Length: 479
Image (cartoon, one colour):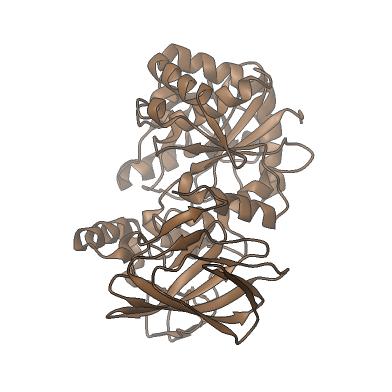
């Protein structure tokens, strides 16, 4: 395989169909839905090693430090991380990556992939990429199509000229792509699967920088000009590349399929017959989690009694989830929300998020654990004029120097060592030691040690919102 393949990982989706584990503030690609690594980490591993250059990541501002933290955990160093000012779908993201890579070489091959898919057979997918390289090098826009094993209404389809592709031999060559088909109704999906001339659209692409830029020049010239400005006016911020928000605001919100692929003529498809899933529903999580002989998938902190074909998943170590006499059910329990649904309604979970947003409850979009550049915190209990949090700070990290208008705080260290600044006083606190932060005091929390530092914070006051923060100094340059 050529050494000139740059993985481009798209990492900005919301993942509403996997609520309550996936939410706007912590989308599914960062969660360990199948296995112990997150989907994003697994994607980065798939496309790393001798055959690939360092990956490029496109993500949103709230996730930039989460991206670096998760990549560091698996020893993958990105070539660059581009920050989109706001989501504009996949076409502008792919274009920004291509323009960024153009300075390296217009012949660079880009392997564009969502970061929330499951591809269990990494070596087989690498072979498919290798097979597709010659087509990409000669200027084709190659998309990867999954050989379907069932009629699926949740996926788009690709129609190919070759009618019989359901054999291993037929997946060993790049085929000509006739057209893209949107998510079909059940009867149409069944007919397409029966015909053998259709593949699922995986949303994974391989093409050269030169070829995709020519496609944008031909089919989306206005977008090309706007994104060029966003890239040329980008700014470096703590090692991240921030695309220019003013130029980006002029960019159309559209997918790469609509903007380019459905209009281009130099299309090809690489069939892939091994396991794959976009993990777009809890039903897919159940399928990919190897159900037991009764068809059940049971997590830690969950028990199934006389259940069949059921997913029981508890994400709270203090909550034991028990299913009794259930069949064809999905039950997902978090510390702040529980989903109970029939498996047949897996594609409707996004309706739950919509209903909760209308109700204006924070569980619709806010994850119970709030990830920050320095670590994370979670609210353990809240009441009238008080709140109790657990705060974990990574080694060598520090919160901003700050004060509050409406609350005072008590900190009790339960793990590691904390360096605490309160006005002009600086002290080190170890396990089981505490400090009081008066209302209005300028204070900072740091972890000077080599292990994570954890403390319990008790807030008291008239207003306890996260926006009651005045920052005087912040290594992460937040406002």
